[in-house]
Amino acid sequence: MARALLQKTMSVWTGPQAQQKCREQRQGSAVPFWAVNLAGHAPQVYSLNGFELEVSEGDFASLVSLRLPRARDLDAAQFERRTIAAYRQIRSLLGSLRQQHPVRFWTFLPKIHEQLDAKRDRYMVFNTGRIHVFREWFGQSGQFTSRLPASSAVGHDEDALSIHCLTLSRSGIALENPRQIPAFQYSSVYGPQPPCFARGTIIDHPSFQSPMLVTAGTASILGENSAHPNDLNRQLSESLQNLRTLVDVAQATGNSAATLDAFVDVRVYHARRQDAAVVESTIRRSIGSATALQVIRAELCRSNLLVEIEGLARLERNKSL
Image (cartoon, rainbow, N blue to C red; front, side, top):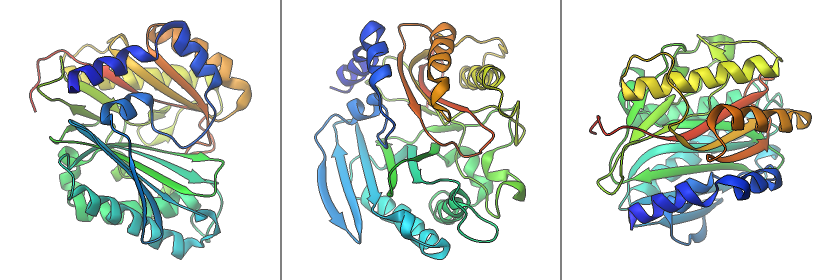
């Protein structure tokens, strides 16, 4: 069953149909197609503690989605408390599932750069709440290196906070990019508390034909700094190089010129509407027309970043979890 779901994931959104779907994709707060297909089952929907919840528990993977309505109406202290409560609610729910190991989070924030207090915009307040729970969940920062899941956080046009968590029956292997400082070690330039996620996670299961690399949202960042601010073409090039580096780290090949052929599914967020065509053509040219692709307009975590890329890549079976 799991193999069939994975093969379906890799074949449904390819070629001309995928390109058409890419053009039709509206900006929203949904997870990529491959994650939905991997969970496989229709979700159970209910409300709990002021959150709207959907839980899809499949044979191999589960997908937990939490929505906090009217999150934009909350002040800084309220939003921080509700972010903490949201992640604790997800953690509690995972304890009742067969697949309890989180390997990828997707978060969508309303007005991500709206100032909420003297020092923090909404993304920074969110980061404060998230790292608070992740220190409880995955240990202090010294343990994050091996346990932290990949993640992304972008803005959307809704008033709600939406968080999605993909879980498997086995934990993944967290990866960092040697070209970048781990996000959880960022300086206070990017907020009183840093963002908290791994750059990538290797996942595997006996049903898979090979291990898979799930990347976090990957942008034009070197060290902890934005590279090529407001330059779309150079940011695309730098982001793609960061993805190549992650593939190389996952494969442990030492090949700094690793190609992007391993990717079977890619999602790209872009900040400016007018950049959609350039973004799509660049990704198609760099990764290949057979790769499933979504291009979505969204506000990114930094105002000087124009593009962020995430994906699912097939690895050679030379690693074990």
